[in-house]
Length: 146
Image 1 (cartoon, rainbow, N blue to C red):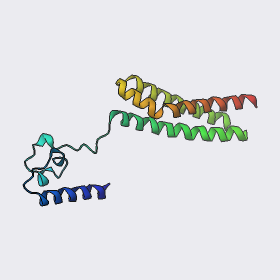
Image 2: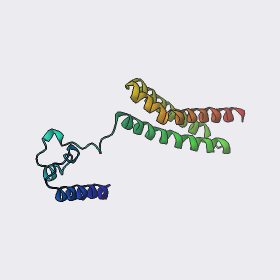
Image 3: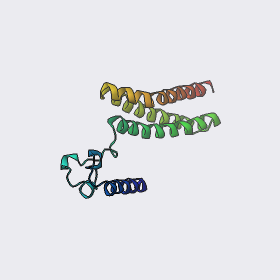
Image 4: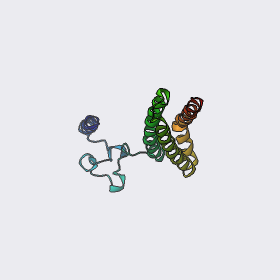
């Protein structure tokens, strides 16, 4: 990431040195190098567009963290249930609790977002959540049969 940023800065500097009569575009007026590379740019033009995240990205990242925790709990509970250990019921409860947290966060993110952001969230994480729900249901069925 740092190397890529340095390479961009070197490329921009070379472009300015090669054609000094050409005024840099507004894309060059971004980030910390705006003053050094393009002192004519106004302060309002000096923004870092490449480092920003969309609203959907932020919410998906939060949901993915919860998903990872719920998935870990599910895998532990599945293993304990298959081996019929004394910890199986507690692990299934923990897996269901983490799944409930995940479902609540997903539902809140979808309901509280704009339609395009909501659709993006559904597209990116909805299927994985449904698969985990089905897995927990199947694990409960396995536990009931034994």
